[in-house]
Amino acid sequence: MAGSLYVVSTPIGNLDDMTVRALNTLKSVGLVAAEDTRRTGLLLRHFGIATPTTSLHEHNETEKLPALLRKLSGGVDIALVSDAGTPIVCDPGQRLISAAIQQGIRVVPIPGASAVMAALAASGYSADEFVFAGFAPSRSKDRKLWLVRVSQDPRAIVFFETPHRITKTLADMAEILVDRPITIARELTKLHEEVVRTTARLATLVQIAERGEFTIVLAPYQVVTPQPDSVDDATLNAYFYRMTEFEGLPRRAALVSTAEKFGLSPNELYARLERFKASGPP
Amino acid sequence: MAGSLYVVSTPIGNLDDMTVRALNTLKSVGLVAAEDTRRTGLLLRHFGIATPTTSLHEHNETEKLPALLRKLSGGVDIALVSDAGTPIVCDPGQRLISAAIQQGIRVVPIPGASAVMAALAASGYSADEFVFAGFAPSRSKDRKLWLVRVSQDPRAIVFFETPHRITKTLADMAEILVDRPITIARELTKLHEEVVRTTARLATLVQIAERGEFTIVLAPYQVVTPQPDSVDDATLNAYFYRMTEFEGLPRRAALVSTAEKFGLSPNELYARLERFKASGPP
Image (cartoon, each protein chain N blue to C red):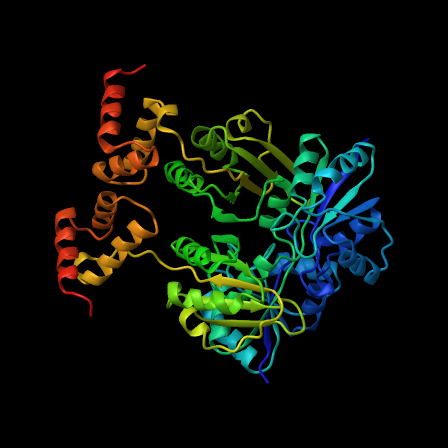
């Protein structure tokens, strides 16, 4: 009989965030496929588990797959783990899961700690719906465009950032998200866990250590259809500018779309954009 | 000194999915605020925990808040739990967290099982980014529009459905999502855990028991910019129809936007839509 592939969540910092079932699974399987065998070795030793490990990361995934699938077909149970949290979220191993499914191997998730869920819980924001947006891009120009795109979504948004880029990313967020409430979580579940709840603009004034992993949550917001009279020319211009520059819409489509958004006719909008232009730079 | 509010994740089905730290927290706090005290009582008794519980659900949240906040300020540690998984995701308790934060109470997430993460792990889909879309709407008309909107997102999408609506929802998904790969997870982590990986269209042919909680995952897809020559008139018409009927765009904006999408001029697109109309119903 073929073995099973267990997709096991491991702690994101605090070793006591291990579940009973995850421990039993790591003990009972024949092999643990780990992103980093040294890190997983520490975890296993901490809990007195002697199961052999093998490395499975993005650079050896392709060559390791056939042997792992052969083991599974031959009856060996395998546990897949990443360095922290649930494998497949920003982790290698997804291809092994996918290939195992295609071969009819039973895939069993063993849930546990997740930085995404922990950060949402710590934020206090309503998370009936939310978006996990992955890692923020590393280049500032890409990151700004990404922040513009990601932040148009009114749902709670979660993403990860590394310690050496956090200061730059917070500066970009201040510029683009302005007054949107955000939560910055650092070293979640660890001894020096820190959760700062502020706004994007005020976050740059907060003293935050550039150490540990960061999980950032953007607060959800209510979408309100604005009244044309309550919107000034500068806002119309900014929205139109965003449509053409960031969304890449042709000018005519942006005009129609902006007019629709604010309950104006395209002609009215055009007149107001011209009036704004004529008013000159402030 | 003020107490702390612990936001504790509990199992989603299998009691062994409890973490060491969640157990220690439930043991050491002065009070457990639970969505359903009977369900949480079963969990606590299973682990021999005698901490008193109090109910906190959507119908009594407002009246219970002041007393809970007084206790926290007075030095009592409180653990917040829901029936299953991480509180605040489709659960009450978010207002307690939010109010505690405003009063400067320390809020500590204790991560653990989550149906969202477990379903993603079981799906085998790439989940570098994903969307949690909550519960599918209960009325068929709302649900269809919701599926159209939700499924335009190329990221992996996770949502919940109840057993008494699953058959209808799968029928709606077959109609709207057609060949998009989906994973249907039922009774995750429980004895009768079932994970079906298929497409929206084929899912209606699968025999699925209408029992237990369902978590559905839509596979992510690659966004490919189509070549105008490779797109037939019917596709252009369908896209244009979607823009006007579902997205609510005025005809002119829909024309410009559809033309842009397929690399056509608005005039070319208009001519092709007219040609399609003239070809008559099949």
